[in-house]
Image (cartoon, rainbow, N blue to C red; front, top):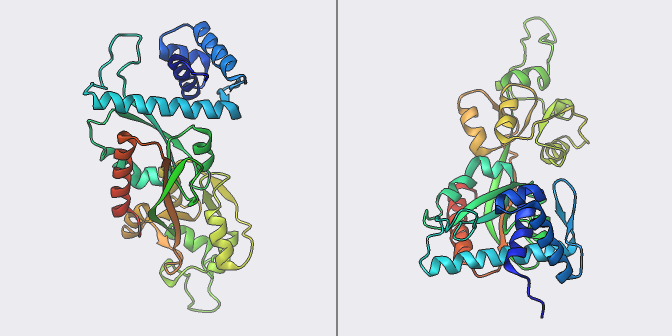
Length: 324
């Protein structure tokens, strides 16, 4: 039976994490030539090409299998060291990755990171031998990262577990459609020009309620080109495909700021929306129509005290931060 040497597996994992052979060589404190030789030897043992020499480096289908194996070996080694009473925060010698905390790659959507997920990571016991590598991914698109072995766990909207993973519900992230008062007055008022239908008529105000029939043409803020939350909401409320101009703002805090500044309307998680609503900087467009997105925690089924500790912290934090 073919056995893959640990240094070759570690090299494969490091190349994928760092993105290039050169960066992996610096991380492993070896020459770039040594990194290339280890990969060639691993590919020779596997009988397949494992890496695409792109920038950043990506894995082939066979490389996904070996990458997953490499992460499992790394996680198990860390658990064994912890059980033996080793100090994972201590490097044995310069140039050696022995006794270094395990890097745990996790896929998580930006809204969760901005509102509750970092609290979960902070709740992991400080004695756990782990550092986190968060991979931002839309909650609808994290399953592929689990399949490829790029991540060991994910916050995802996919209930069906990826092969080799378990899936459990975390709760519901509730979104509210919001806009600035000035934006509502300009774009969603029945009298946007401020001219009444007759003498004594006054300009419509946000407190009078926005005209949601106009939502499909009002500018919207979207996170990126995979963000359909605003589009689907407008289509459901108006019954038509929205024709709105779109601002793309791919950062959670900046996304919320863009809405407060009046660039467009958008869907904000309650944790971000409520302080702005309370301060009067935002207006809720449809209070009776929130959008609920169920979230699930998928993780490898590999038995690991370290992964269990992270799962416990995520589960406990989500119980308080999300709707049931």
